[in-house]
Image (cartoon, rainbow, N blue to C red):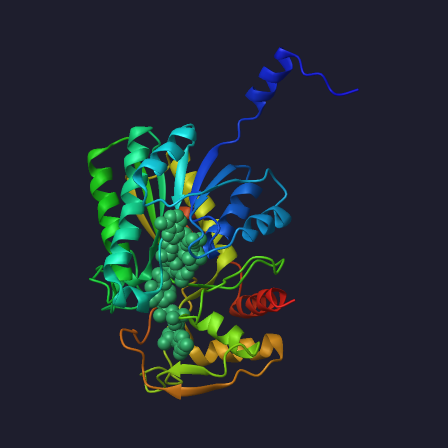
Length: 358
Ligand code: NAD
Ligand code: WQD
């Protein structure tokens, strides 16, 4: 005999089922998928919108395999399409907020195809904000990037460091995106937003089921290392060994993607609880520790017992020599304390790469 729900039981259930609904755009991508898992574990109801331009539907299954809470809903949606984005928001107008990961992110490609990058990344943002205003959805978290600092005058970089014109159209979409949000927030006192400026996210979920899956030849260091070791690439080219750093290679602030994902939950909770100091806030997300390219290679070789085949080539145009954050604002205000080490990052990246090849 099936369970009979009375009207009263159903209404009690809906009162008790007070999970807050959050829209996650670009939620099947690298950082979005890890964040969706953390949000589910923190008790949120998740709706993902993604056009799968840089992700696959099987990520949804992996999210379900590694998370213990309710399955996220998914809609294949191009967020540059204003009409479809409107219908999507209308359908989910009871959502409490949006985390926007959706963007194209390949720096080199953006130099070749600037209009594509401006159109995609800025239309997505404008469509989202327009619908948030329409449906009085007042909490937005935006994926920004350390690239907005350009070549920094002082290290470490903090949130008050001057934000320069980034060296690529991609980076400029982040700077302009932040400015659009700030302008909108200035005129809408109910609207609240946090831009999170990520430094260098690497690593993968401890399960080995979620990680970074670049399309084609990777631009970033970590996936290039894992693909070189797996035999997919012949050799890693280390861009420059004549920088003014202890070993001559460039220094970055690498952070584990799971730590990064948790920062989104904290930022969202800050907004939902109205704990924000102003209605537009910015946080740098990095560990505050700089590692050189050779440090990353050494950590990888130590944690995986695999040799990385590499050679030195000229510096890559547009690269800054050293970039790392002052992590104190995220620590003191968001209470975010990244726990993973560089060894955890390199080990988990390799675990994911191995599981991809099974
Ligand atoms: P990703 O490419 O893995 O994820 C982005 C997702 O957005 C993909 O699933 C893609 O299919 C989707 N998308 C792109 N255009 C879309 C559109 N028009 N409509 C719907 N979906 C669309 O990238 P990621 O590494 O997870 O980065 C997430 C966000 O963080 C991006 O905004 C990126 O610019 C930003 N960011 C990334 C890094 C990094 O190093 N990975 C650093 C700083 C900032
Ligand atoms: C890291 C270091 C390279 C590849 C980029 C974007 C930035 C942000 C994060 C999105 C550098 C060196 C790399 C290789 C190498 N993304 N390297 N050989 O350039 O710090 O930041 O990703 O917002 O906007 O610019 O990251 O991983 O490409 O490079 O020697 O094949 O590794 O020169 O010193 P980057 P990266």
